[in-house]
Length: 215
Image 1: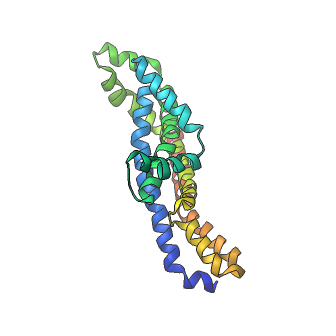
Image 2 (image 1 turned 90 degrees about the horizontal axis):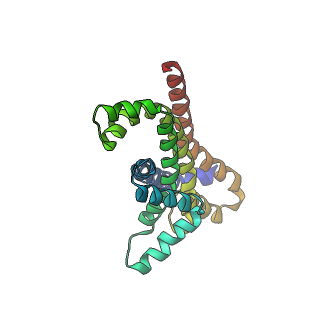
Image 3 (image 1 turned 135 degrees about the horizontal axis):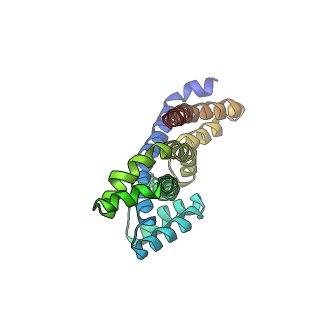
């Protein structure tokens, strides 16, 4: 317990960096995922093909490989950032296909007649999606998206292997000098993660109940 108290500022810094990775990469993944989902249902075949290939390749690529590409291959291509930025980009890209699939499933859950009615009123594809389809799909999409964010929270730990000093990296450094306190340190790290994931899970459950009542 003494090891945790003595290194509490380091744990807090690691927690804040984990939170930063979650927020920035989560927002970016939501933006990219929404665009990819729109492309998946686009009437333009080339956009559908690109979105499908992107989703299948990235979703089936290990996160470690994505982060390795960002940290070591992008610099060879002349793209230079710090490791935290590279980790953020990697997490953002890796998470975006899962966001896209969650949004697409919600869109597919909207009755086809809604889109047909919108087109009959003269609305274009973009207007139909943004004004008619997405507002109806969003209620069922939010809970799965929160589950994606919970998975993203845990995935941030992989960044520890790429010189990003987040929670897991801090715990490894502390354990090196406090080997007799390994279990309490790992429990403390788990508690920090629970501070993020438990509220997100409760929020998802609350939304699911609200959607069920609304239906």
